[in-house]
Length: 394
Image 1 (cartoon, one colour):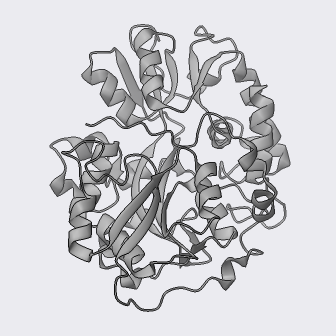
Image 2 (image 1 turned 60 degrees about the vertical axis):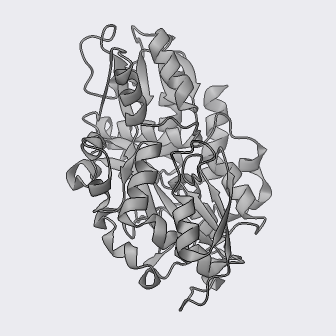
């Protein structure tokens, strides 16, 4: 497994998250200008270029590692010359997409609905993407990549936010997220948590399973009372946190040194540490977990829409999807991708395991129009979560 320097949503959510443009679109998707964005009904000639905005490690052309290149075959196959800009946070991606300079973006679930609501991405005609048929059904037409029965992109890869712990220090072996939320933790100062407002959903998931009286049915659909309960839990947790992490290489280093001994992590981090002989284990706790399923989306202002569709089709192909997702460290989205990954790789990431996937609550942008289907209340939106996260961290 190659190591990349991805920071999925960033260490600190800056003023970008609170910009007026972001606040305007978070009230709900139905009132946005997204309904005015037209879906491509047929393909034309490739324009010869495509501009891609992506997470680090998602668009590799050999410049990072000469042995890692899935861009050149695409360019040779389609005639579309790729230019790439990487981003470090979902807020940064949202801001950059508003410039209209990019044709395609790899959006995580904490950005995708914001992009739809702002009218920055177009509905995707999956009939024009032959490789879409090979995508796992449990990743298609979900609340983070579709709106009102309309697809807004092609799934790329997915993974869970696991509970990782030092096996030589944390005993007995934990089975629940209570290991990070208990008030009087014996590991005070060495508990770690993901640094993002979306982490509020982790607390909400725990409360959903342990405090049914709150009536939480979706950790991304929280009314004001439910959000307040999650915030209270996270403020209580704050005294036990040694570090909020976003850079997974730093997270790995903290577990190696023992500065962190229990907390949220990813399978790729656990695999990296285990490969180096570190005494760590990572589990999917009994409550389930949050996670991510990234989506390739097409800009509503795309200057090269045909090449954009060519990229979506190519990156969803079994071989390209296998190469890209294994390089990054996540499960592939294409059912046939495992035929092109190294032995044991797909098993390590539970690729295609629908029952495992059912236990993951994939990042979904909190919006006022409750994604759990409730219509009798107004849910809290991403801007409110961002404000709450600042209060939690102090």
